[in-house]
Length: 278
Length: 172
Image (cartoon, rainbow over all chains, first blue to last red; front, side, top):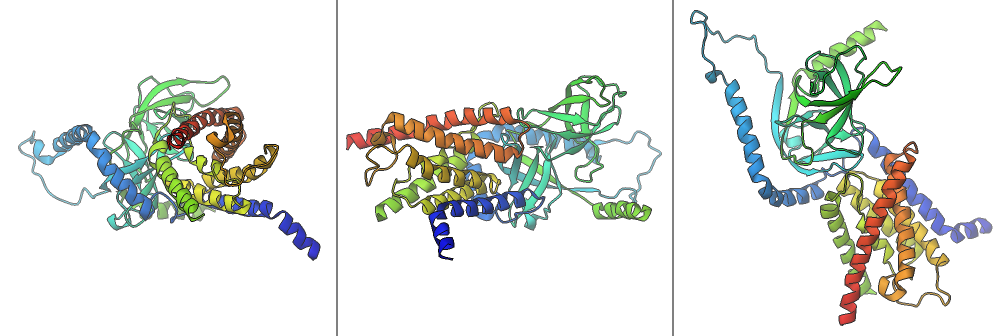
C-alpha cells in the first residue's frame, strides 16, 4: 500500500495530465455527436451576447451591401406578388380554395458569428428557441443554401454550415434532375464537391445545382452553385464534380431559417413503410 | 504573489478575448491560423507548480473552445503543451538552474533559449491540435504542413508581443 501511494505521489503530474486529457477527450467525442453539448457551444448565452455586441458594430461597415441585397430580394418578392400579375383570360374566375397549403415558413435571422477556416465550420444566429427555431431546420439566404441548425439555446442558434466536413446536402442537377450529395473539404471556401452522379449523365460547365428537397431540410430548388469543372476517373462509375458555391460564406449577414411543415407526417409515413417491409 | 495572480489573470482574459474576437477571424489562404493564446502557458513563472500549469492549461483551452464551438480540441492540445513544458523546462535548464522570481521571457532568458523553448512547445501544441482536429492520419503531410506554417506565424506573434514587453521594461 505504501509503495502504491509513493508511486502515485511520485508520478502525480502524469496522472493529473492523463486525467485532464481524459476529460478533454470525453468532451471532444461527446461534442462530435449530433445535437449534443447544448451548454458549451457558441450559442451559449454569455459568448453569444458578446458576439451580438461585436456584430452590431461590425454591421455598420456592411450596411450598403446588405441594403442592396435586401432591396433586390424585395423586388424579387414583389414580382411574385399576386398584384403584379394581370389576368390573361378575362373569362376565368379566381376562386380562393384549398388548392394551396403552406409548406414552408421562413424566419429572418442575422448572422452574428461565422467561420470558414476550420474543417467543421459553424455559424451563430441571433434567433433561438423563443423564435421557434429547432435543431434540424434548414438555413438559406437570398443567394443560396447556408446550412442546418445544430444546436439551439433560448436566444441563439448554432448552424452547421455547408462548409462542414460532415454536412452532406442532398443536391440535384437542375437540368437533368439527377440527385447527388454535396460535400466540402477544407481548403477552398468557394468550392464544394458533388458526388454520386453516374457516368452516363451529360454534364456541362455552368450547370446549376439546386437542393433536391428530399431531405426535408431545405425547400426544393434553392440554388447551391454551378458546375465549375468535372472529371471522370478511369474505371469509375461516378463523376468527380467541383461546384462553385453561390453563397460567399465569408460575407453572410441576413439569412432565413426554414421550417418545413408536415415534416413529421412525411417522415413517419416513410418510416412506417420501411418497418412494414421487414 | 497577489500581484502576480492579478497580472496573470489580466493576461489570461486579454489573450482569450484577442484570440476569440480577432485572431480567429484572421486566416491566410484558408490554411494558417495563429494561436497566440498559448503565450499564456509559455510565460508562466518557473516556480509554478506542475499541477497548476496543467489545470491552467485545461481552463485556457476550454475557454478558447467555447468561443470556437470545438469543445475538447484546444483543451486537449493545451493540456498536452503544459505537460510537455514541465519536462522541457527540466531538459533545457541552464547549468546553474533557474533564478527565483524569473519568468520564461525573451528579456531574462535570452533570444536563443526563448526561441528553442517557444518553438518546441508551440509546435507540439499545434501538431496535437491539428491532429485532434482532423482525427485521422490519412492526410498526414497536409496536417503536418498546417502545423508547421501556423507554428511559424504563432512564434512570430509571440516574439512581437515579447518585444513590446522588452521596450517597456527598458524604459522604466
